[in-house]
Amino acid sequence: MKNKIGPPVEGDDFYGRRDEIEFVWQQILEGNNLLFPAPRRVGKTSFAKKLLEKAKSNEWDTLEINLEGISSEKQFVKSFLGEIQKLSIWTKMKSSVGKTLRKLIPNLSSTAELSGVKVEINWLGERELIFDELKVLLDHSEDTLIMVDELGVLLNNYTIQSEGDIADAEYLLNWFRSLRQVSNTKIRWIFCSSVGIKNFTNKYNISHTVNDLTQYELKIFERKEAKEIILMLTKTKKIEIGEGIIDHMLDKLGWYLPYFVQLFFSQINRLNKIEGMPINKEIIEIAYVKLIEGQSLDTWDERLVHYGEYEKSARIILCHLCQNKKGLKRKRLFDLIFQLDADEEKANRDLAQIIRMLTNDGYLFRNESSKYAFRSPFLRDYWNIKFIK
Image (cartoon, rainbow, N blue to C red; front, side, top):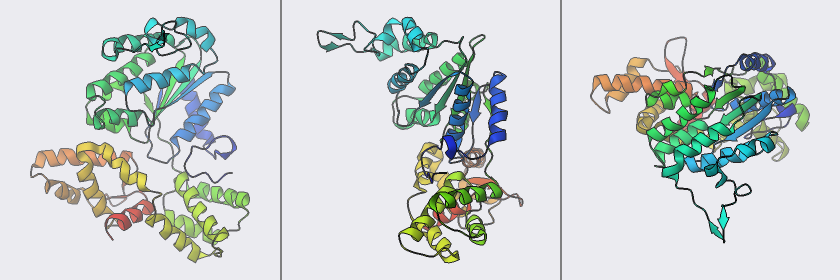
């Protein structure tokens, strides 16, 4: 097993989840389209890629569309077209490309370049035609699994970067829905995103655009599974870590996201190999402090910009909770929000939305004492170091 800390894991580096893969594959065979609403860094993309591998092994066509870094419909369409051309049935499909789409595929278009002058698309005038031609282009008679990654990022970019507005986001979601609703289609879809699609659609009251998707929440690794990952990594890196030390590592993490496990091991391995520190409880403490004081978890801070009008309130809640390991009751969180805007009804409504968003994204959970607390002690300590101490 490789010590991979950022990119999705594939092939032999993918660990466990055998029962989950089989269960979800059966869901796909039964005609379901899936939404993975699990928190950040649970392994949604890696899981989806494993399903694409399984589809390929069953002689399905597969398509992977990553929307990270895409902020407009134009970029989306070009990316979508680029991926479609990788399908094994593209040779047959390209004869169905409509006149407008041909302008976006130079090697098919007889008018893409005329005397060195590039033909431009009138996006506002031809947008609906473009999406209609894209819809017709897909071959619904072939078994195909399509994974769309980071759709939530694109949706938020519509509202944050002023490339469009909520109507544009709703248009795109409805277009995807229309593809899923084609009669007798053999195309199946998987949607996953580090920015919650459900958060977005609920916030703007457009949940109807995704209500046909079957939600599947990936399991967080159990302690036993996290320990097995560390043991496999010790063999790869030829480093000896005693069982007691591994238990101390896991006690520090508390919540066993694959990313957290890999990140922690990487720091310990570096301290041992580069700085010559012996493997003991002291190196665990040093590695932990380096991580919570570093930048490895900064994306958890940066992604709150996608909360829009709720960002300020969400940050206030997180800053209070990072100082209360046992968590706070909902009434206390309500008081924090009420101080910002002395409107009881609005504060209660906003709090419900913020709790839902922070819970969906893996920041919070409701513990056995019915208090809201940081789901990850690791993330809580990072937040405390960065914003409080």
